[in-house]
Length: 567
Image (cartoon, rainbow, N blue to C red):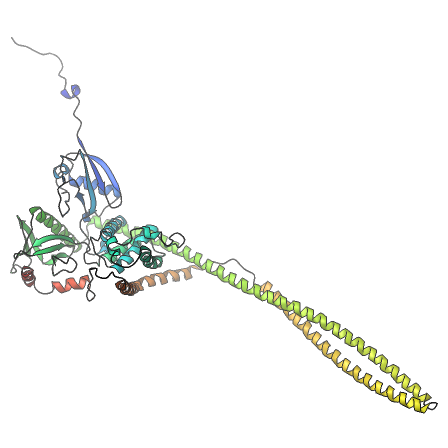
């Protein structure tokens, strides 16, 4: 019997709701910030990386990668990086993930020169990562350079040194120097801090971004900067270290990862491959034998291949014309740098103006104190002059009165002489004696009167001189009060400030030589403070990192390969 259905067909999705897509929670840590978001299970490593990079505004993505921390508890000497082309879920251990995995966004490749870094965020991330590696001694830095780097790190964190804020003992709480290195010197934390502050105080006037770049510039000269180390063996079975960096491949002895013995720059490398645990590098010169070495794990060879390809790509990128993205980034960075330079010049101008105003104010205060002292002295001199004048006036008045009295007495005596002469006839003997006494008295009175007159004249001249000095003192006091009025300090003109800015830039050009001299001085000082019997790695005093690489690159590739197998 046939059955028919005449109703309306209803889609299953309208009856049974679609099953929600299962999401994977991603937690990503950078050296600066953490972030967390959810993605579908089919999301690739590239999509997760781009989402994280966009979140922090990172555009120079070719230096960075996602380090996999979800390896199911497998311990490995070397980091595991998320492959961009594969799904994230296929690269993690889902047994213990609980739908949540954690990655680290870190610098995987390093530039040939830190000056090639364009964005401030790129410089900042490199700065924090390198600082962490130096403090944990993943990258070895000698004591004197650790002190210099610590001063840049403090400036990058706090800005200009302020004695009122950065008191002795406060900064020693910061991790400025690697703990293991501090134990190898007879120096307290406060002693380390004093050496750091001596340099920190010299960075005043610079930006935090400048300090981060200076940190990287000093760091890139360290032998272990940007080198990824892998334990390998030559055909004799000798354990050696293979170092991969932005310039090429380095080979180190097992007990020394600082000074390389052999170096193969990327310009000499034609092809890279591996088969099982054997790794093969074909030189550009086809007549030269292949450079072969061995590892203990296949996965180690995969990591070596990945880092070699990435570093070689960056090496080739530097020798090619910039892409449109890089050109746009450089233009944007140039404009941003110009804007910051204008702001910095303005800040310098304001700071210089403030310093000049403060300096002028201090000078005016010194001048004021000087003028006040002069005014006090002039006033004291005037007061003494007035007192001396009063005394002399009294003496002159007394001398004149005495002279007048003596003159009167002389006149009276003269009259008596005349009277006595008229009466001399009556009493000659008596009068002769009286006359003689009167003449003698008259002479004495005349002499005394003349002496008194001379003294009065002398006192009169002294009085006139005192009054003259008094007038001079009053005039000087008047000049001091009128001609030295304290005026508000004026700001210097733009021309003077521009000269100040140019001088600051000139100081920056010669600073490198000064830093070298300071490093050598501090190096000698630290050498004397080493704990006896403690072994501390040393940098080669005769040649730096670049001179060493140049020396060990000399000669044919063939001879270096032969030397590798002879180790």
